[in-house]
Image 1 (cartoon, rainbow, N blue to C red):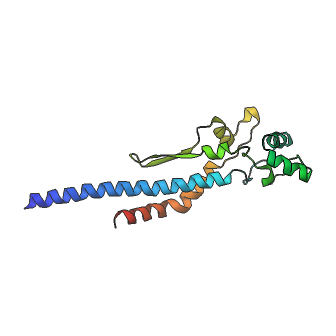
Image 2 (image 1 turned 45 degrees about the horizontal axis):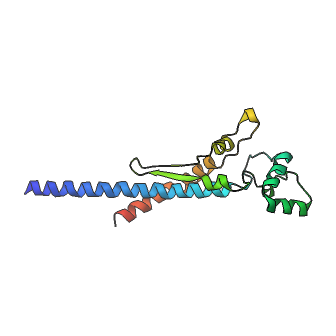
Image 3 (image 1 turned 180 degrees about the vertical axis):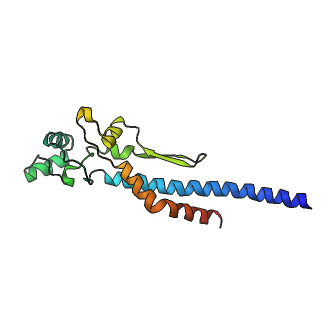
Length: 162
């Protein structure tokens, strides 16, 4: 009798362990998606502490983006304004599109990033090439983890054990 009870208990714990693990993964993945979306929204908008683009950079960007170039011609300015009209880190949208999530459910971790080398250059800056740091992934991570991770984990665990 005791052996059956212990076997049943062990089976229950095993099944619960899988649900617990899967629920934690779901919570981490939900927060990771929030981080990714937050980081993508930050691109194209000046963030606190970001230096204004150089006029030469704005002119080069306008040569790549014909719609923005027409707006600049209409306004009569090809100069850096320090406003979203300069669209920092957005020329054609490649940087934004490259931000993805790699979810490792086995280790319960998510990596949010980009395979583009110049993404790291913009995030961290490059003093040798006089490229200022324009962090968008790190602030998004800090903000979303602080505001949502605990609740996302609680919600996922609650759903997992209903």
